[in-house]
Length: 109
Image 1: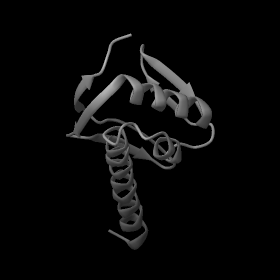
Image 2 (image 1 turned 45 degrees about the vertical axis):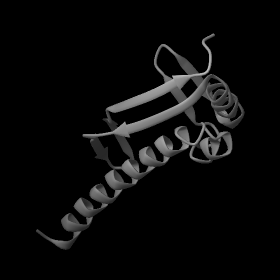
Image 3 (image 1 turned 60 degrees about the horizontal axis):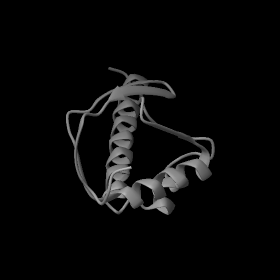
């Protein structure tokens, strides 16, 4: 294997690890009462948070509002992620990171 191929493979591994660290940070934010400041910090200005069929927020203002809503409705959460399946292709990535979430609600709306 030449150096160029080795560097390409290393970049893919580093990208996958960065995605896993970002997901772990997101889980920590959720478990920190859905801290709105921390939540928006991990999204691009035009980023999208989407829970398919549940919620969708685009941009920092909407994501902040969504996080505040979660904080008002959820008194406790604990996120655990496992077995990530991430594919990296150049500057694009896709994948699935299954999660188990435990939540206690203050009240239902």
